[in-house]
Length: 152
Image (cartoon, rainbow, N blue to C red; front, side, top):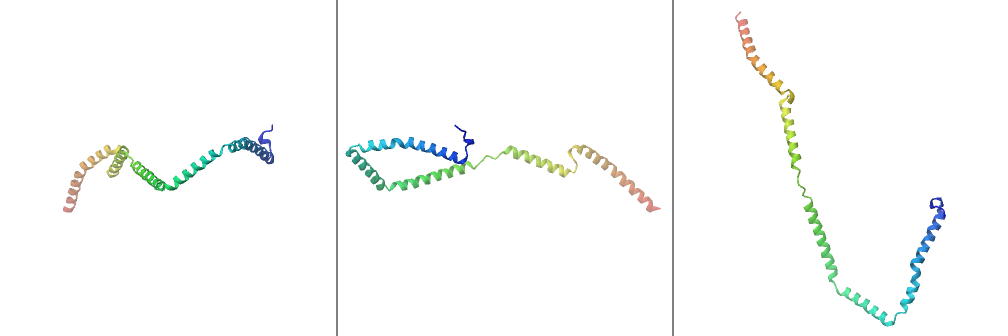
């Protein structure tokens, strides 16, 4: 037997058709025998079958409740699905992340308002103290020099 990859398209098609024919023969072969045995049933059997079929058809035609029940069931399913989807949409808010984000934002705003990086804040405070202690002396010294120049 040759491998299917070695077959050309026509040979492959023939092989598939042969396989399908064998399958159909195996499936439908016993059908003739079954049909022969079915015809051997007595007429009373076929009359009972016919009566049962007619009763089922009549029962399905008498019951107009089935379409209403089908619509009611469909409505109930849609309603239930809507309720489930709407209740599933309310997700708990992650508060821990919001808090840390808020803290970071506050820290950034404070550092921007201070004008000095956090690492240099001690040096900035020292520079402010030095400049504030030097300014009154320089102002008073300048004022005295100006007064002396005006007097001369």
